[in-house]
Image 1 (cartoon, rainbow, N blue to C red):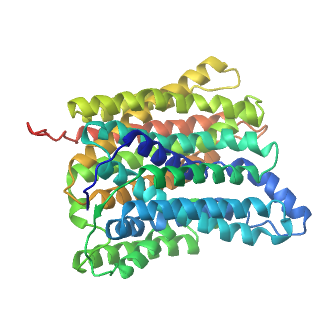
Image 2 (cartoon, rainbow, N blue to C red):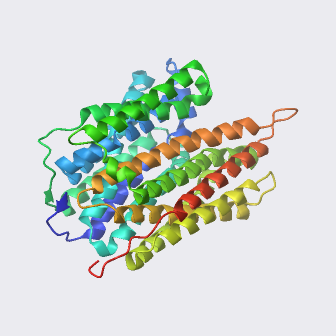
Image 3 (cartoon, rainbow, N blue to C red):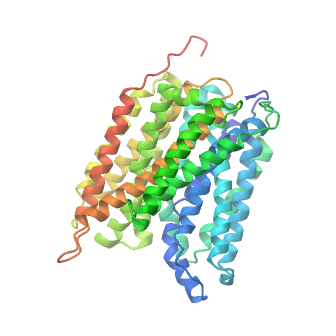
Length: 472
């Protein structure tokens, strides 16, 4: 698909895409700090809250499992149409979840159902954002624009606990109401400034529903297993059954997508070594980052003694690191076309940040904590932006939507895996006798994060920058 109409105001269009991406990424983590308050209020209203964790899990599942379907739909129906539909669905469902806070009699099931709808809307936004940058914006600012959207996704995840902690001090419903004005502003900017005419793929209005169903089963079982592993038992009958089902679904996806006439996933793109290595490095970095985001609030609260709002502001240092380095890398990539050096350097800087975190103890000063968070964020910002830029250099005309979907699917899978792995390592090394000591758990978990970052470095070393022609 290509755009045949010029863009009068690319900066405002980029701002709309950043708004939508940040908003949907924010809701993946903003809810975590509100769950205890939400559970307490619903319990007082006489509701069973044993399934409260599904408020978090269902959003991730719905967001991740349908991204590739939305990407294909965007290629056939238009990126803008799918993006705006996603923003509208997300904002409307956010409003309804917020209203549940004033009508607790509706119960937990209503909130979980609406969070599922919210996740579907978030998936549409996430699937379209990178494709729209690559298709709608001028080539000379494409690298920095991809960097801005990539950072919006990372920063939204990082800012979630901080903003959630602040808003929950008023009422948990505010963490959902805040999405409504942001969503409306995003929609207004799209209506007002996103004047595009797209040459759409002609697929005879047919979508690969079989492939979508198989992908759903594969991703659902994988993410459910990674999130619920400690609860159901990693090697329990149910756990092994989920892995078995996931592997069967993965095999069927691979076979089906190679044989169907209009596949949901372009297997040729997956087999391209540069694209595969780029999205793998991205997945590894998201794995380390998301796992650390789970643990850092516990360290700051239970070891350092900070209140929710205080540690929320401390964690912003990580996002500052991303926002400082990410745009710089994007602009340099636009000018030089060199991305590999930033991927490998960023992975090493990220590993350095996790090494600094591995040295945390009861007496660690605030300055060391802030610097380590900044260093880790700077490394993530460098490597993530460069990975995304490099992968988009290797696609053909009209493949923007599919690559956007593949990239975001790998990111979400990495996030779920990182949370599961680092949490399992942390819990496995917490000392409980004679007194509870959390420090060994944190140290071993951050050591694993170092290993994951170094794996991203190794993968990055196998990448190659695409040479620019004189006409590029």
